[in-house]
Length: 216
Length: 145
Image (tube, rainbow over all chains, first blue to last red; front, side, top):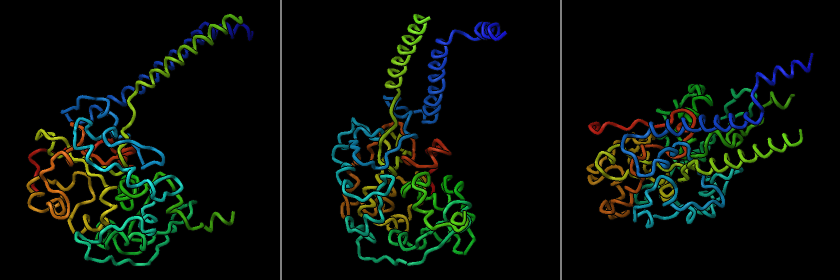
């Protein structure tokens, strides 16, 4: 009986060596439409190298340690443009900057260690008004609670950057969720664009122990 | 039986090598710095390379607040509708790039350094990677603020 079933299944299925070919073809059919869609997403004027415009949206380079990518080869600069060689190379200036546990540059530490001294106005004659005022968000489910430190943010920003357009200055007045953040709202206006991204290093925000977890 | 296995192993090895060579041909993602902004609202239509704004370079020299509060840059790639007329008038980039605080607008190719055809986007942005693959280019007539 089992022998008959085996023979039958062997007849239905192709010889198993062919499955590799199927997988191989499948890889390419799944890989190709992605590239094609990216080419379609780019406007009508195409560069001479379609491969470069096809992949721009997936690029990631969090100023990774040990990675040296010259500006002319980074995929968004035009290597035929002579002026690109006049621009400062990123790894030249950021080699010594402190990094967080994910290898992303920790700009708060960079500022506090005095490695950089960014101007506070166009001419550098203004001062910042840092406020030391933490907010703890406790509606985080099973995740550790979120501590929002005003101090670190007001060393870079002024109140009007966030309030009242991005965050209503009212306790519990902002329905913040990870979904909204990843879609670029609330914290996601900066985190995920210039500040460290919400998809890496959860613990930098979710840093306060959650009592619900400790009891378990 | 053993010869059949050998043949299968050989076949899968050949296919594996072919797949590896195929993967080498797939273009690698762009490796620009995190938060580099390509601004291509009007550049392509005007026959210029798109402008590339390196956030990392500017945040070493200025706090966020200087551009995003004092100069009025919105938190949106391509959302400021910057034109050369506004820059020469001292608005947006022109507040510094006027030959006094930084080099002036004669150095066209220092900003207009992007690959032609690259759409307006925020390099490495989470929204762009996970939610919306591209920003829509603005219409060339849409210059009013």
